[in-house]
Length: 85
Image (cartoon, rainbow, N blue to C red; front, side):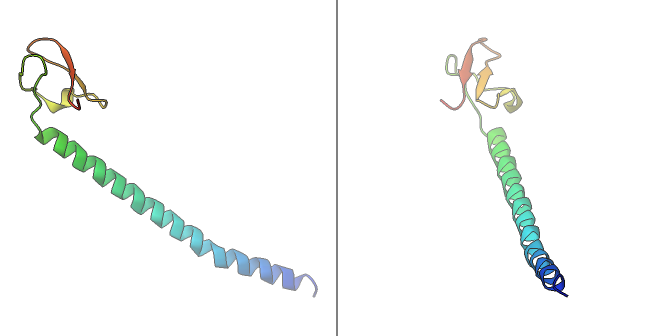
């Protein structure tokens, strides 16, 4: 009889806190979804911009050539430049 009360208390704690962990997982998934959406929007904006070389003002042929840090090599004059500077 003396073991029933601690078992009931442990079961209560388990079933009380389990939904809280499920909510945390839902919030993490929503946060990841927002981050992915933000990355997709940034990629679309990056593709819509026309970048010009700092040395010869030639327009960049493809936004796919831009590295994540913004470095790109001009196809016209073969000089490196950064689109974020």
